[in-house]
Structure formats: structure tokens, C-alpha cells
Length: 302
Image (tube, rainbow, N blue to C red; front, side):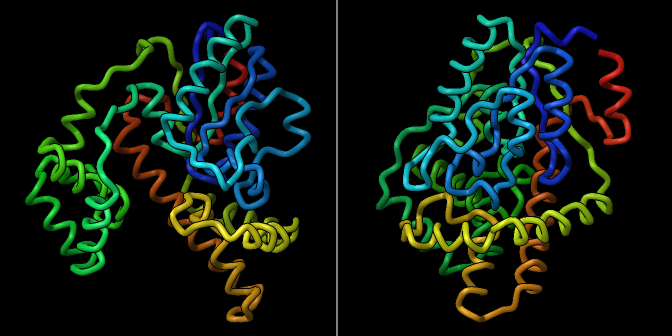
């Protein structure tokens, strides 16, 4: 199997061992690793985002990890511009670009291109958010389906951010979000990529997620959140959504004990992993699914 001419993409739910597998693969094919996780770009969230270890980074060169401040705005479009430049730079050095992460939108932008949506005024967007709060998630989703039938079965009713985004796009442009997607093209051909989806068994993943939550707290997660809270970020900053921040904040306010913090982080991480798996089933049907037990055999065939 010749992967050295490809752009390698590795996706999977959080705690599935993507980073460690990517390091082993990079060593075999002279690759370097590029981050495709929206929280791991932030330098202030090393522990909460479970960035690769120092050992991993010493073994193989890593890019786009911890290079942005949580104070900065950083969109999928910003990531894509840098990612495409990294591909060019690595190819010039005869290195194989290996993208690793759990942010489905990053991978979709890379493989399918990024939709150039028109700028929607914040006043208009706030009206949609106000409507959502007024009618509730279930009724809002029902209204969205009536407004844009193309959304049905493509957006989960519980994915409120994407539901509101779809609603505002349809209402403002009179075109479905998916009509915009259909008219978008990538800079790359399908055969440029080798796509790997780590298909981790759910029960095993749950155990790994709990262990990760425990390690996160043991390794300084509380202190990291304390430093983060001192920054007093505006509520609309995406870094505020990092799993662990609200839970540790409640602990610092003495609302919950440390055991409850770990339980809550574990539960929220499981929910996130489930959403990642749902995204994978919907958007990554042509990816090569590999069970963790098959990773050794995969590496031997290269």
C-alpha cells in the first residue's frame, strides 16, 4: 500500500487513540502531523483539549497545535488557509501530510471545499437565536424543517448551533445551506486523499473517556481552568465550549465535588463522541473504517 503520495486524513471520536496511531503511521511513511481539532489550536487549553504529549511531538513533527490564543477569532476558513499552505510546504520537503482530529467541519472543508456564505448581519442572526430561546429546541427544529425540507435527516435536532445556522441561511439567502454546499468545489481531487476513520467500539470508548477525564484532573485541569477564567472571555468565544470549563467552574464555586466534576466531564465527552460518530456516519461513508484491533495489521501492510 503506497501512501507516500497521498494526503492522509485520520478521523475518529475523542479518546479513540487517533494521535498515537498518527505518530506510528508518520514514522513509517516519513510524515508530519497537522492538527484538525478546533480546540487543540488554543495554547491555553493543553490539558482540556488533550493535545498530543511532548513525547509524541518529539518523535514526529506536529503542526497547528496550541498556536492560537483563546482571545482570537479562528474560523474553519482560517484553519483551511493555513492547512493548505502546510500541505504545500510538506510536499516540497517530501513529507507526507497527516491530518488528525475530531472536527468534522475541518475535514469537510479540506475535502469538499469551504462554502462562501454571504455575511449575515448580527442583528438578523440574533433574531434567530431569540426565536430559538422563545420556542425551544423541538419547536424550532419543526419550523426549520418547514422552512427548509432539505435539512431533514441531515441535521440532528439536538445540534442547536447548526440548526440556527441553517435557519438563518435559508431565511436570509432564500437558499438551503445544502444548496450552498452543492455549489462548492475543493482544491483537491478525491484520489489525493487516503481517509481513515477509527471505528472504536462504544463500550471500550466509554472506559477510555472516563480514564481520560480522571487523568485530565490529575494532570492539572483545575489549574488550567483557573487561568482560563481569569481571562474573562466574552461569552461568544468558541473556547468557552471546551469540555471541562463549566464543570470545573462549578467545582471552584463549591457547587459540586471533584468526583462529580469527573463524572460530568465524562458524560459530556461521551455525548460529544456520539455526535462525532453521527457526523462520521453521515459525511464519511467513503472513508476506510479501521477497528483499533486492526491498526497493527494496517501498519504492517504499508
